[in-house]
Image 1 (cartoon, helix red, strand yellow):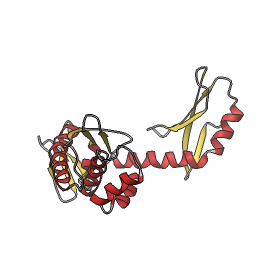
Image 2 (image 1 turned 180 degrees about the vertical axis):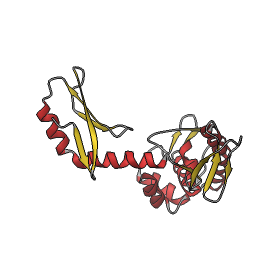
Image 3 (image 1 turned 90 degrees about the horizontal axis):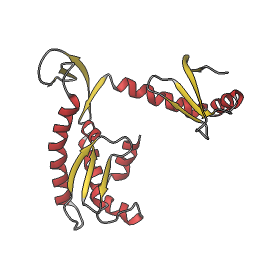
Image 4 (image 1 turned 120 degrees about the vertical axis):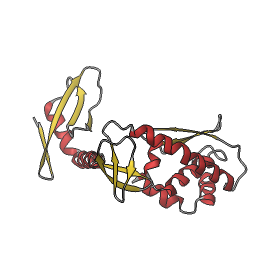
Length: 213
């Protein structure tokens, strides 16, 4: 049975967990870069090994993504710029040319949310003021989201923006805001919806592609 997966001259541990309640076979790569396989108790080792080998490209893509995320944790991103983190004993956060200085116990998420609240509110106001269609004025919420940059609740007129946007260049923030405002015209992703987005953000296709990457 395959217990180690080799890729780019590295070895990755393969962990198998068989459960009676699991109908299908699932493969994922965990944060520690272990290849984790979940399947039914009656799934043969031969089938597991064949499935792993048949899905090498997908597994290697997951490994590459995990390694990239691990590497990015070594840095601090703010408004589209990357900074090296330097830890010290100071109380507040300070920025240098390419470095950010902070203590180990500094609440970075709390600081980022405070910055995001002020910045996102200002950009939402500006984007709403310049929007090409007449729409109700939405309220703003900010939270971390894993799969979306923004969400528009068309019933309650609430736009929720992903906190992670504070790490990106503000052009992406404006694109996401225009995208969500456009849902107050068309609550779908129809051709007409995308026309409204493009009316307000000429480079929306480019920004969308870059964010997805």
